[in-house]
Image (cartoon, rainbow, N blue to C red; front, side, top):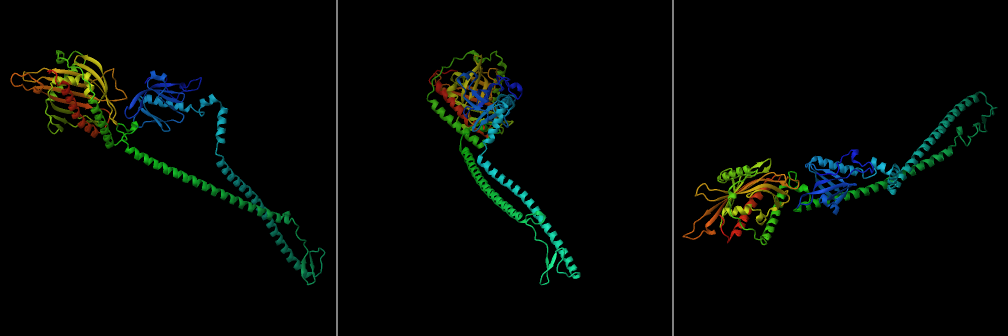
Length: 593
């Protein structure tokens, strides 16, 4: 990834003049859709905004999309160490860095921009001033719901009144208690003195006493000479006033309690209504979620990269198989339509000695070794318990042996076919010549020759059409065409094309495609049935015997059942399509042995 600046959480990533984090730009792989998959894009992080462009050179034409990071959620992927997702509400960007270190760098930079976007950080206080932050806090308090504040305020007021009434009531109870205690003491003292006076009367029967405490009335009874209590009562307490105040206080308490209960009932009703609304919202959300899940299960395609090929794919094996089958059916229809508009291509070149030699390029020894291995493998028998025979379309037979390594299907395949009216040289030429490849090979999206090693050997890079939900594949291979000289006069002419994977600095692996490894050979022999008499050999007298050998490592991950089903379906179709094309192009033309 090429970047303008590194991003981390240190102070060095902040511009000292503006207080803003520095700009970050670089190449990230962005998930586009289920057709194109991951695409490299130039991504720029600046001013709390994440933008992307098709390439760095196209920045002047404007960005393809942008996200404001104020409320963005950054989620590192659980299994993919290079991937992270940036989501704002319903908008989600799926991004992949070239390695885990760059992913961490991008995540830290985005989080730093996000943190510096508001007024909550230290640098924002330096930029905007502390008074602004205080004003913002005050305005936040003032924006509180007025109605809810008043309800709570009234209840608190009533509770404060209850506290006041309690203090008043306690003082009144103390005062009245003192009054009652004084009254009880006075009564006790009065009874004591009355008993003592009665005892004195027995000794001194007089009608009046100098102190005037008692006086005998006409019926002989004694009257108490104490004067009645004053309005203030004992110890100066106004009992009547205290009683009235006590009554008023208790009435106030009861009234306040009643009001508090009323407020609490109303508050309970309000909360109950809010609870009912939340329950209703939850019910609607759950119904919507169930509907969305049901709708998602009905769809034949899914939108995000979590549904593509991989051991953690959210698609089960049956849905994966159905999706691949549907994609292949669509490709078949496209092939049928393209058959009608194919244009004739170049004529065959005459054979030369160059086709029987290997050359002196750096891969010459590898080519010779591969040719010898394929020639030896082609004559081996294909029967037995170790092989599984699964195709018989008249002259076309296909064999496969089930082999897996680390969960990846590596089934070696061998097909035999007999094609009338063509020679081995013609079949191998059309299989090798890149000028006519797109006429018969319908699975290729694009290709180009990376390097020409010799007249009969080239290095080719090609990408295959994506069959969703499987990831797109690319292949880098050396393709060589050879004529195998016959060892005796009875041995038929043999031509061979071998394609095997190599590495090249001009075509390194990318995140966009999964690099597949191949080792393929097309071995063709020409069988001639001599015509009667002196007639010239025609195409009715020749037949090409084909041995097609394929060892493919698809890379990545896909269900084994899906890979084997695709192989069973596509290999026979490919051979029939290719040989029919060769028959069509050679019909009526001179025979090329």
